[in-house]
Length: 245
Image (cartoon, rainbow, N blue to C red; front, side, top):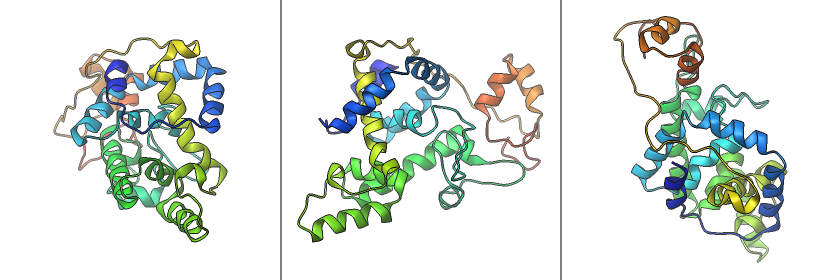
């Protein structure tokens, strides 16, 4: 699967000290990368397929490394949740249910669809500039567009690396470019990743009724850990009475 991702790289290359710095940061934490990609094995095939359907750069499949380390129940201080780290308001804007029964910001399929919709919108908003779009995914389109306008008014370059942004957003694009470069050629950085099969890890089954997740694990012949990792949106031990199941 990593070979398939590499073959779909299409972001413009960038030689910048910020990317080199982030590469060294990842190289210093090989255990973190190993754990992250082992978790990501559950989700990457699906994400890659959805990106391919839309003709989007496959480097974006690695964005959850930066966002959540592929932890589907990751939760931030800003109340962002899930693989793609949607805050509540953006999640609602993109149709992700959040109630007593379910938080679709953690739903692998629904949140992936919402994240790719958002990234495509941002790419159009910034006239096809993926670096600005990715930065805006983290910092918001208003923040990034205002930084572009400030530079333009001062006669300065308006590319991502020339903008004055908050540290988190300023580091966000270099982090993605760094992990993309490492995945592109791990041995060049003294790293290696376990092979991830180029096949679906999960299938979608609708039992047609409310079901206990423990019961679903038994019926599927998988562990409770796997059933929870693949169905992290459910806030209770059962699916909602009216669905989705």
